[in-house]
Image (tube, rainbow, N blue to C red; front, side, top):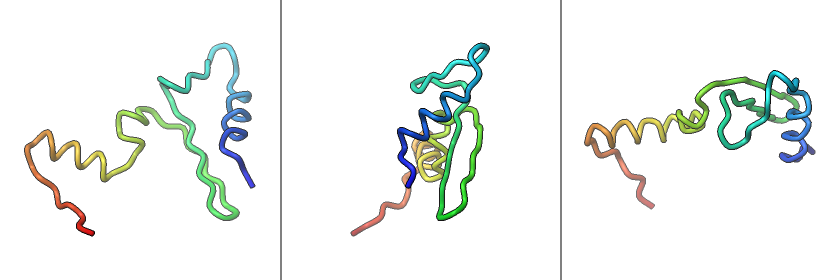
Length: 76
């Protein structure tokens, strides 16, 4: 089983210093690691937080709010 903190620390150690530095609060680029069963996917992306961690629902909600459009609310 992989532990989140161990993965972060291991990947941070692989980043060549210099010229790069690890900044977990305000990154220029973000390394995304997704594990599903026996498959591991790794991506390097820019603007991870700007685009709401690539959560399409949150990006769409923000765009609708800026345009004064009310979205559908889930009712329980």
